[in-house]
Image (tube, rainbow, N blue to C red; front, side, top):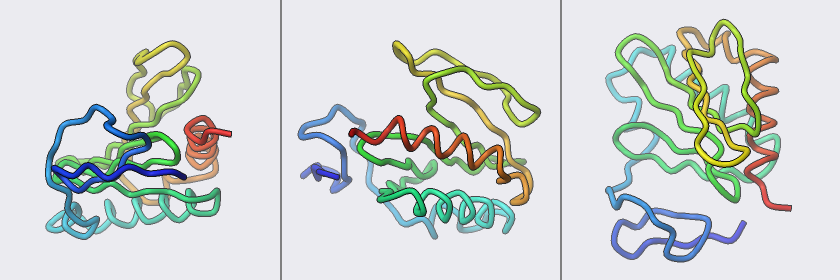
Length: 139
């Protein structure tokens, strides 16, 4: 995984001079500080699964954590009543946890997955995470 570190915000990206909003990074612990414990537990299950697939960069900022292989594959954002998992996939998915999907580029769709319990990071969600990882990893 070749990475570029922005000299202005000290965050890592997949390509040199990648367009981004320069905001200061923080730690994953800071993202989940003061949040309900189930949110961190669900995040831990997500990242644990992704790390079985290969290298994952956790780009933590105040609004959440951007998860990246060679490019971004997901975002995890703590909300007032849930943990939002925003997945980037090459197709539209549906299911009880999927709120909506949006086309973000040719062959790329963003999906809003609402998690309220760590147990919801189940075989189905892990399969979606695996698919997102595979698409984000350049081969």
